[in-house]
Length: 70
Image 1 (tube, rainbow, N blue to C red):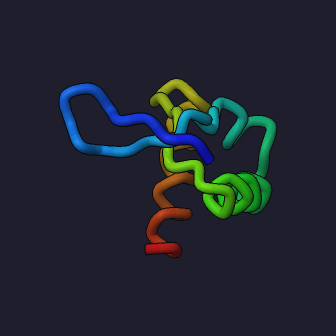
Image 2 (image 1 turned 90 degrees about the vertical axis):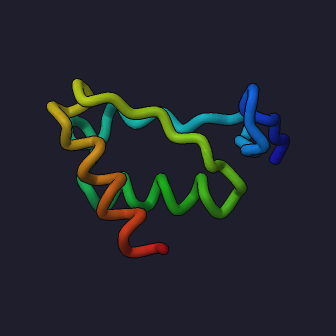
């Protein structure tokens, strides 16, 4: 995985971002967690979400994923 530094910080982020617009609408929570696992195992640490993705469900799914993996 290639990384870049977030401007004005020392934070390294992956150049590939996982979009989560389908989480909560087109993907089940289990499918979303599988996609997150796949991405994280390959070094992705940049995840795009917004409160409009799945009516906020996307953020809840990501939160549950992070809670079980931290």
